[in-house]
Length: 208
Image (tube, rainbow, N blue to C red; front, side, top):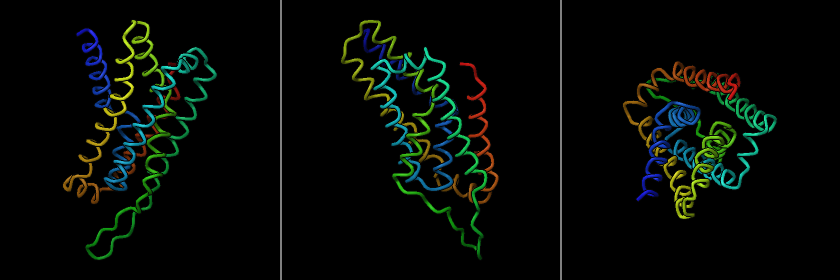
């Protein structure tokens, strides 16, 4: 019963973390409304793979080294910041296709592999995500929890990310939501691009 309580608590924390807008939240919204639901879903797959990777090296102890080494932490931190700024600038300066007659042209979609790569890199280059998973699994392992708990969470947390990111993608590609975006996409692009850059600056200026 105690192990079930631990698992439930951790998954609830992880679920609530997705409801707090951050780089991955903004990324899913960006890729879903700028490109397509399919791209949003493949981005979600990349994010889930990134989570699984974080968990693997957290359990292996690599995240502990990062948390104790300012140099290693800052290298990952600023790689992530640079990538977020790149995505933000790319979104800010997206060229809106000219509209002829009443037809609306969508932004040219990207390949599933590109979407997975964007989701994976944005996640894996986040030092906050690294320390988040490191702290969770360090607590679990130090508490003497059985290995099945660790293995269960190693599988459940990436699946939880896949589910939450997928739900966000589906929501932001609903007909009404997308029709509003089609009308005001230049404003949405600037807001989303600015949000990515702002998040990058917040991460860059944070001391943690």
